[in-house]
Length: 469
Image 1 (cartoon, rainbow, N blue to C red):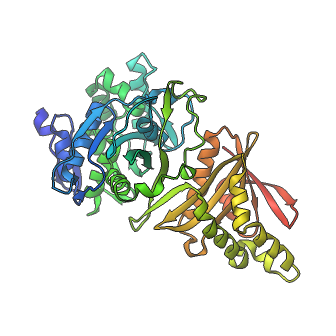
Image 2 (spheres, rainbow, N blue to C red; image 1 turned 135 degrees about the vertical axis):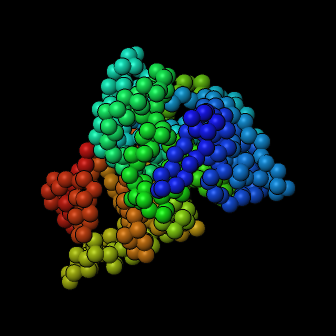
Image 3 (cartoon, rainbow, N blue to C red; image 1 turned 90 degrees about the horizontal axis):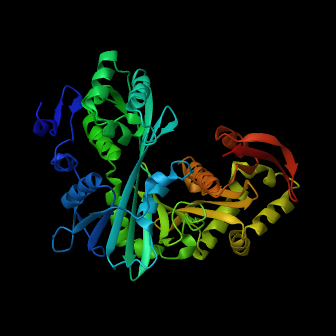
């Protein structure tokens, strides 16, 4: 098959084949991804901080989807980031942060232009729950081929997280947004002859560049992709899911457009430094970048719901305290987790809990110097839930977590807990502890927390539960 033909897609019999090897590969991928045009009002230029080929894919995607109010395509520049991703290989970096660093790390004195958007992406791979990286430190390609053969010789459950980040400058303020869309897929084992054909088809350079030595957009492997996000390859919805899969593994997921729309229309609402989800990061002390570089931007994480609506995860700001207090007070009065507070004789305890979570109480909780995060999940101005964590030595002290009763069982608590764990680990905590009461005990147990025993605070009993990070 010629290089030109390999760049086309062949769709039929429930199977999608492709090879994105030619110079027109980005063009083909963009043409198969259906997107609605976006007309931008604030953003006027785009700089892509990434490798050249990934930059080409992003450029084609923007050319198909984004324009200014006059219908003109936005100018796009591709350049290497000032932060190099390989420096984090031996250090823990929380989800999304590698993409954020590519956008937000620059030498001191770097000038940013109003209306300029910096885009970046990063792809992480977990096979059977184990993170795999590019084997750059391995000198012997035969060793890499042996590892690849072992992986491809059995069925695999794979998760690809395609982190994407954007940093826009508005009136001199730098506002950033990150997303972490994940795709899961099942790959059946290859035969010995297929494995041999695969490993011999790649150059030593390609083996070293691919995470785990595996290039997922490869004809020999794609035949063995059995399902993507639970959709089997024989289902009608597989082909569009496969295009989304390709965009994710290539670092160009459709969520890039969600970030662009958000920063263009709502970015200015998030310039308050108090809301910076990465405000605790000191990359110089961590050795992630040099002392002559700085980390810029007020950052939030965008979370896409099942209805494709976008929620914003950030640190709490002062205007949030009223809603946070109301959520906590309502939970004490109505949530099953606090049913014991409503038992006869416990009225004084209920009052004490509510008094500790007044507007002033929430403000005091948020302001403690050892607070490493005070996360809120917000959608269209409504707080869906919040989570506060302090650092005490190597322990992340989960002080408070509340989900609005209007959004229970929609993943709000799971997201807040997961992200607070990532932040705590990034901040150097070895474990997290929580005080579980009522129904929350079994919920924390399902999340991996271990019961240490019943304790007593100034108001009531609780289960002390701990999870290693």
